[in-house]
Length: 618
Image 1 (cartoon, rainbow, N blue to C red):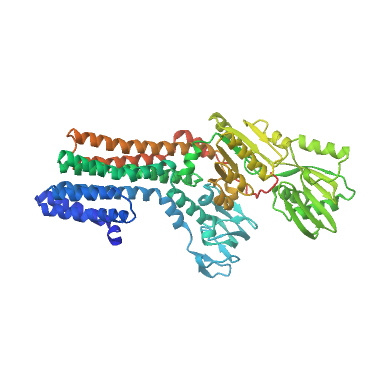
Image 2 (tube, rainbow, N blue to C red):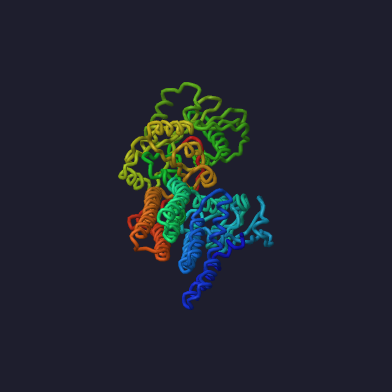
């Protein structure tokens, strides 16, 4: 049976040729043979469905074909079987075409890799720790870190951005990206299915197979609709004693366009999003997006560039150089963006031994340095009262809108730093667009309230909340949901996992790709905030498109059955219009591939994509 199912195209061609010969030479046996050849794959599908206790569309058609032959109408039987397979072929061809972007991604992955010693090996044999060399014009074979050389690398396959980025020692590179010029040596960190590139391919495939609530409803509807048509046809046949009429009802009642209406819209819509750097995890997410009325944002690395620099330093220690060395040594052991900014600013000249590093989310880091306990973080690290001078200095930093970082040595406050970040260029336009469309916009940040308010003072925001731990962000989302609000949370995908999971829709910026793929519902691979507006519009278009397909499918069946009752439609002509309705549904879904004119300015805006790793105290 499997062999028959895999040769449906050959059966369609054979059935079509035999039907044409039968009509030309008026040979009924050729038409019966055509019905058998083209109808066999349909009957096999019907039988396979019955084995799983499902009454499928193919069962309707199979019964109709057998009935048409038995009542001496082989022409209708041959034509209907051919048209049914032809419609199925067109459907599969259209779906396959919309998946070509995924196939292109997979095909673009390199098959071999060149080790630094010149030996070429299959990519499948690469292991973590291997060192590979990538030349100009070649594709990076695995995720890793640059350990030598420099190159411009195009990351369009990962981020959707066409511009090349300069990569040198210490930079992260991804499998599937292209070296435009230069040469780099890479130490492999991830291979095969663990690479970001492969995860993106898997995500798109899984998402396109996922169904929206509308699609699920349609599938359930088709399951009870099919036996209903069987019952109606049986009753009509018994009452009217017109077997031909009953068989025609079976054929025209097939809801083919209804069944494919939602899947084809999902496939095309999600493919369009992926092309524009928006990865959506399924049609269910698209439906939820249409209900969002509140959008909450993380600040650092999401609304801002995450490029932080020290602007103020106030010391209360006699040996400033020693304090700076200890602070720099402690922060060098962390990955927090504020800490890395401090390291860049302090540039410690001596290497101090750091032991017992302990990071507390939303507070800071503590370690043992030169027999001293050194703590670096926000005001929650303070255990002793401050002097009036210290309080005034801290207040000045906070009221000026800078992020505050304090350091204590043996619980004694010794220095206060002020650090500033910059907004992403597209943040104001994105927030204005969301506000114009009636969305409530809220910032949830681990930074101080004053710093958040100062940074966001001129932006169209509904609320700003600072000084929040990751758990506090989750609580804020839960509180909004308890009020009946549908919440989207937008974060960087690094430490915002709990908030992304709690929100009705979690959206992660591409800088936190690994965590984002596991946690978020949507990933903006290009980290372009204006894509949020495109995301909302795409979701609306997808949902409208599915409903339009539903109207086309049900409307066609209703019109055909009405035409049948008044004598305007017969089996062959009805089946032809039935297949036309399938083509209309596919054509309507393919409209999602085109970018609306009003989106073009949004999708053309390119925001800076910071390569920073954000952590706890944002």
